[in-house]
Length: 292
Image (cartoon, rainbow, N blue to C red):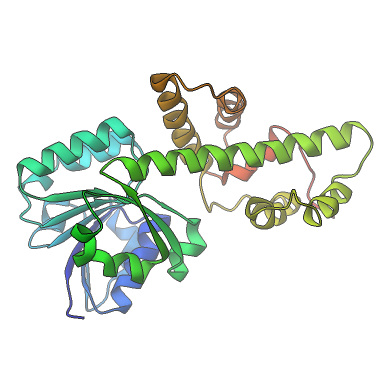
């Protein structure tokens, strides 16, 4: 495959992994970071680093948005000179509200730039290892064939969800489910503790039962060691949860179980865990002490 010119706006946990994997395939990358000095280790013969978005996207064929909150996406697209780009594609890989996603699509359509939403899941390790799962919203599968190499290089699979916006809808629902599953575990440990059952005993039972899940396999070691290293920040999960609750409200969908998560996540934010992994909510609910 010939080298493609790709600009990546946002080089945090996920953007860094994506950049590394595309670079290994020989693509020419232009990376933007608000603090360029923090990603100087990524600089190489085919990776250039910028602190200005307009310069970053200059001469790029493909622009990848790898950002977090809506206001950051809006600022990066509408107040940075990005709209002067002559790029052919813009891919939003962050988790963005449906309303902003549709606004972005309308804006880029007017400029004859193909826009698609391709939010991802898999956290830091998956980004590093090229094992991301992408959820794509685009006009058709055929129209994303030209850029499918990005998903193949950076991911383990790509699920085509439907038209623009459908990728975000699926991702928002997914993260609500993950947040709910983790909280059920925490409340299970809390109940067991209240009845004199050591958390390690319930952990052993869960791991050998039908209640075992990908969440328990990945998060339990961190919870029981008291290590809240950030794989997916609590503040970002809370942001996605709010997107989910907002969609539920707008569509009149009853989310009786997950609606209570808002209060729990606010407590985690108030306790100063926003930058930590969302499994730090252990400190809010179960309060399992680190193993000695």
